[in-house]
Length: 226
Image 1: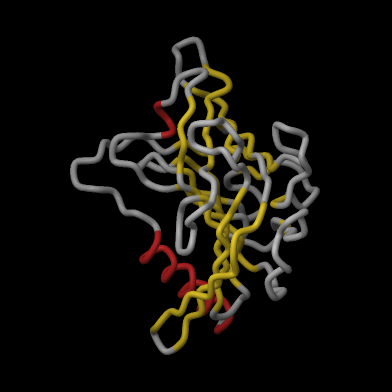
Image 2: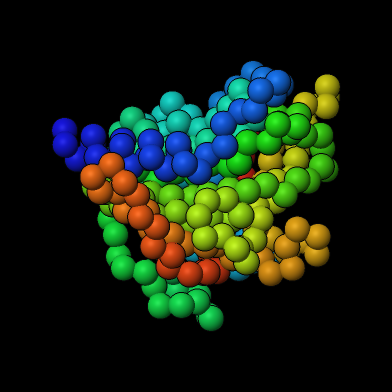
């Protein structure tokens, strides 16, 4: 019980300090449950460094996963929200990367994107793209939360944006499939797949950030309405 309480407190601390809350007057939209694939390679065929667990799609409400576009229009995925049957693999080895940060157990991995007052992922139309802040994270099951920030979170100067693209739509124009990856596009990113890695250490009600540096962490998400 103590372990799970510590995890919850660590995630809450992260959320309070780094996840933007909806601004006054923001347009709320219906939440969308999702089916999510973490692809083995990105759109340039570069092998992932944030990778799936080999068990297929992550589906909202299945095997303890929660995955949705929220009513505030941002992406929220908890890979172990209600059970520990699924996980995500993080690989810090990539040509030019610093030495890997200290190894931590991967507990309660998640991904969340930034809230924008004037933008909802649900409202994208076929072919539209948008640069978004996004963070991948996990705890060590105790007092450390590790964030991999793509222009979202602490110590992300020099990191890439994630780029969301609507890749399929229904006949009414409603987007039904998105891809999200920190790819090079010449506008948002000239240097792709760079994440700022930070360890947030909570102790006695206070948090200390330990900047681990910038790492190439390629990934690609394919997201479908459930």
